[in-house]
Amino acid sequence: MTQTAIPYIFMRGGTSKGPYFLREDLPEDLETLSQVLIAAVGAGHPLNIDGIGGGAAVTTKVAMLSKSQDNWADIDYFFAQVSVEEKLVDFKPTCGNIMSGVGPAAIEMGLIEPADDVTEIRIRAVNTGAQVLAKVQTPGGALDYEGDTEIAGAPGSASPIELSFMGVVGAATGKFLPTGNLRDTIQGVEVTCMDVAMPVVIARAEDLGVTGYESAEDLDANSDFFARLEAIRVEAGEKMGMGDVTNSVTPKFGLLAPAKDGGTIAVRYFMPKKTHPSMAVTGAQCLASCALTPGTVADGLLERPTASPAEVVLEHASGSIGVLVDFNTEDGFELNAAGLVRTARKLAAGQVFVPARIWAGKE
Image (cartoon, rainbow, N blue to C red; front, side):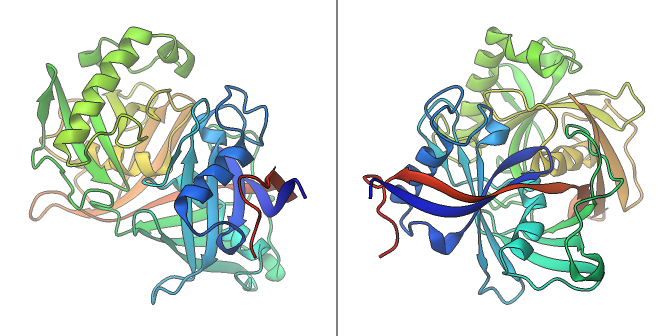
């Protein structure tokens, strides 16, 4: 046999999509696993022409699910960010949009028995240790993908999936402020380095010579801007204790500007070498936390809510996303939990094939 068949479900989760696998159907060691995912997605080509990736960072994401042995969780969610044009896999981050599809996928895979109305699924993000409670619509004990919930960056409407994130502060670095400072100056630009659900380097758009209202396409065409952003990100990664981040997708980068469409604050988010077409769920939590924290680069860009919980509406490149933040400010800013509503849809199911020379399958 020249190819190895691997069962999978292909799902849209939030504004991302990709294959969802049972962890037990894949290689245990990460080196072989990386090669399998690279082959499955078709990494190393801008169109992912030899795999099932879609030629963009939001379509080369992979979810791997298993029953959890954790005392709190039902499902372990192991995430992989596969590169588009490079044959690289990053297991450091997690993804909240792909997380949106974990609950439905777990039910589809038989890992979770659906309840009669709403099924609550406790998910442990293996990469970061975050705890997420997902509420999935299962009327009559059956998954329902149809509904009236719309999210910016995905067409049409679908059934709502409520996500409540806990334990996300310092998920990657162990610290809310990995450098110990509310602000740092890196290469002449003031930034806030924050780790909430995702480590992010955050700056004011005007300090990098842009407005913060540009389209993703306009920003992607600005090579000088990206060169400067990447230089700041790499140096910030060192200061955040993350080592050499040149070949890692973390920390991400975010820009802030005053809101102009009725939201709380305007944002642009980077993955990090391309502009996110909408907004990452994990990044949204970090940017919302930055907006709520006095002394950060967000100062002066918004009228900061003081009562908890507060909805922070982030205006992004495709519309807006609301983050319901439960926090307290008795001793500085402290995040308790962040909630978002997403949608997901099953797109396909079957087998994906990788060359047997890469992996011959389970014995």
